[in-house]
Image (cartoon, rainbow, N blue to C red):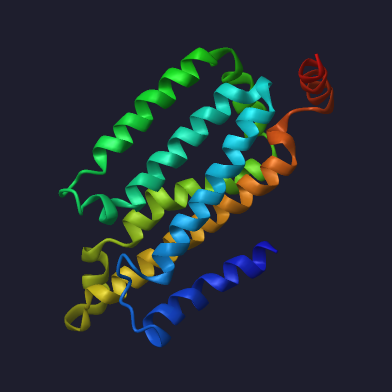
Length: 200
């Protein structure tokens, strides 16, 4: 399934720049899928935070981070209010998220370490590293100016960067899905304790 999802990334970019004749604008299919995949990731993590009380602090932290990313991805929408307005809802979400994580700080460190050791978490963290570091560096205009010389066009750089971001979000969404299926690293004994507490 992951191989198919990753193989679809260049197909989506190709559809955008050829069939839809879109140069990676904010209304492109690629940008839409950025938001859709991130929303799906948030849904899995938030559902997990409600369902698994023993990992609630950690999952709320991840959900806060993802939601801030989602708001940043929707910056064009917020720019209709004024340029850079996205920072206000992002800071609001960050403030509320940190407060909720603090209230559940007893379920932060151990669940984080348990999840970090699992295979599903690897997909999430690799996706995040690709998104925050690799796509920013590899999508730098000066790099592609040096590679392409006089043939440089920002549309090439944008297509490459947006495609890499789509792959990053694909990995994050896939990792979130299989993490949810795997109870975010909670053992069966911990799951039984959660179910018992919910029955009471």
